[in-house]
Image (tube, rainbow, N blue to C red; front, side, top):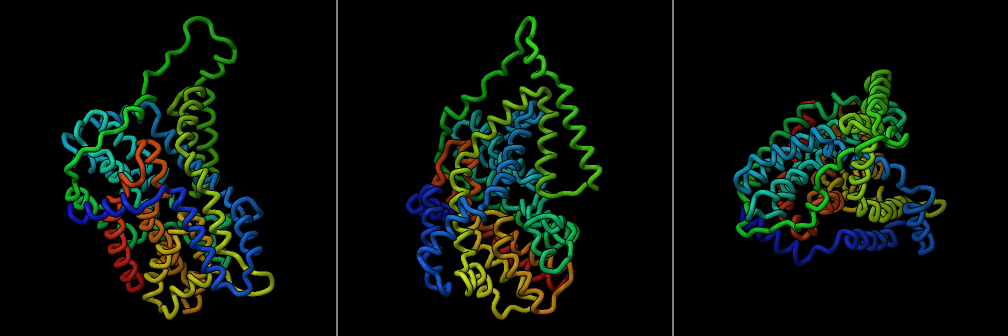
Length: 455
């Protein structure tokens, strides 16, 4: 395992560009097959399709804003005083870097199953606290372990594809649009093929993390601890009316009560928007006063800068994948997705959809946005072979979801917030996560080959 990890680290350090340049290269790589495989494609049409995906009528901004809010609200919640103290307390337990890495991995995995934004950042925050007190640790190894826990987020309660399947009003509920069927969570994330695979993956990754321990240290940049100064005490003396309002805790309680009441009235509907709402109002409650919540939210928003820079580029890639010349032709996304499932049957379609999902996720690293690209072809393929049951359609949607989760281990898009928290570059982390990609591909692939036989 150490030899494999060392090899992966070496090649990532030599070949992996900055994630922004990675997105630019992917854009260039998409243009060539569009020109070759899409009938009637023209340079002007390609450029217009790219523009529509970035800034035009088909832009990705609505979904991107939802994803950014899930990340920011999760980070804000993790920074609440009670949770921050818990993180510091937990980070004081490890006595060596293997224990520390397993801790970061476990925290990230458990919380990713609850909310991907919370899980994504909490493991990194634990890693930061561990590195602060544990001399001689390899900080990139700790951050990589935290990111590996993120591999199970698509089988958690904030899985964008699984949640979209439950919401008839969701613009990415592909199954309902094509069949009129609503697929509940019990037929996706709570199926045995999903949660059993999660257990196996987590066990194998824990063993791998233990075996890939690096021998050389990587100290964290001291600047990452500059924002951990003491909490500013409230001003002494009489407050102005504005300061009184900023510290009026009952306002946060009212916001929390309103959010929970709506959640109850909605029938406890879990979707992307409700998850954003729940973590926002819970974060407000735990930060107690409005001004503390505002400051925590503003601090959390700083880590989203790299995402905001790159999301438009991936929106442009989505536009290119969906480009159809006026009057005829099939978009590249349809050509690719259909080619990957050609000849598939009832028992092989989920696995081939999973493989296609890994490939497409390199170009569209977003669960919901990816489902909008691959979902129609995957669902149409299932219908074409006579599979109309909600359980099978749920399996197809999860095939796409877990493919995206596995591909994240070699696609740096969702690693960016952790890199911002840790002030590391992608080459110091991703060499470790390639091992997680290999393990996840093997386990989830096997689960999807077995699942059609037991539905």
